[in-house]
Image (cartoon, rainbow, N blue to C red; front, side):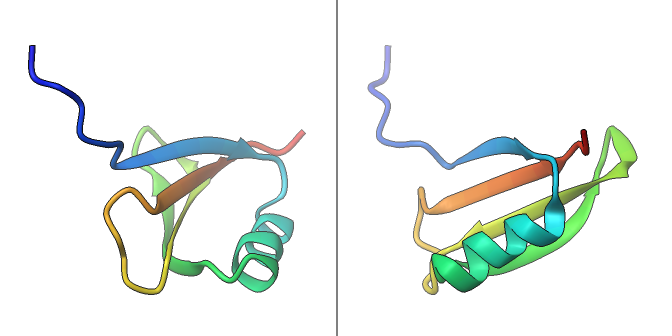
Length: 67
């Protein structure tokens, strides 16, 4: 078995996309790389953040599921 060298990204759930953007972009200073919709459910936002350099393993994404 090949050893794991790292993780590409993680995906989490948020209930409030505007507050999520405020926290991760403004407070933490991450760069929003992309805002799109979930391929499996186009009614759901998919937010992508990374560091300024787009470093491997620095990506974090969120699906917005209010409530």
